[in-house]
Image 1: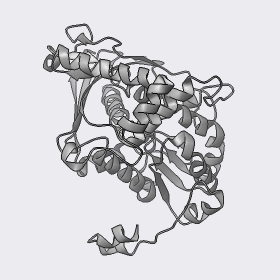
Image 2: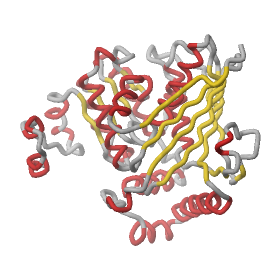
Image 3: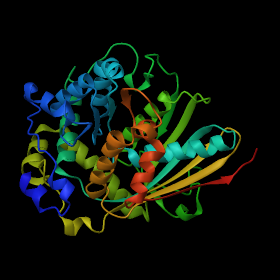
Length: 375
């Protein structure tokens, strides 16, 4: 760590203290959280390695950001530590990377455009164009989650309400997000096709659609200004033709089935898939990108749309950038953030436009507009 710090050309970075902590040893964690405004975590699977750090950040009032996409783990952390974080003032924000900032912020901006027209957002369609590679950490998380789901009583349990619907005051939101994604690849010459640019494209399941919809659900549950009672959320990956759509879908299904089988899971994990800390190199990442085209509809017919574009690898380079900007927001921009007080928040609820401005100023393209107001 010291060697990497010393090769950087910024004098201020070279002066930063280094605090060595093993988060599996609980007694070492206070030295970190007591001397830090915000901790950002890239450990994974978080369900195996993330508990202690969240607990101590909540207890010591230290802000926290991570890149998990493990929504069941997030639910468990909310159920255990929401009341503590609220008392200490710690803002704990998960999913601050490719899971799930692009979609969470896109829905936020569409909602704001509708509200400018005295309308309420009731439907969102996200069409994703993606080229990227899975990291070893992502693979390990997938393997762990899928293997755990096959075991009885292995997944976290909580009593009562879904923690994702828990408001800051402890009550349970009745807001519902009705999520939909194509199970079988299909042409976008369907009622779900809403933009001419995608008229001849094909849709397939986007692997993170369920995760994204869960975080959007929590964002809506935490928003006291909601007048609508539900949101229809459709998300898919868009492909130029039949072949590429089916190739992606069958590859995804094949990977899941292989992980479900203990024998093939062992072979894949040992000999084929990257290990945690491994992944695509710079040469392979240079052509990767992500584009999220989002289309919204209001109760009065207001049509809104946005596009968010990451010209670099969204799973590696831009996830690191999104997480870093999120941590800086929490550590440095407290007076400008939309929410006062502690608790578990989503990126959109905790940081909103402040985070959007940061990621746009450092390399993301974003634009939004009102297409039509039928009111």
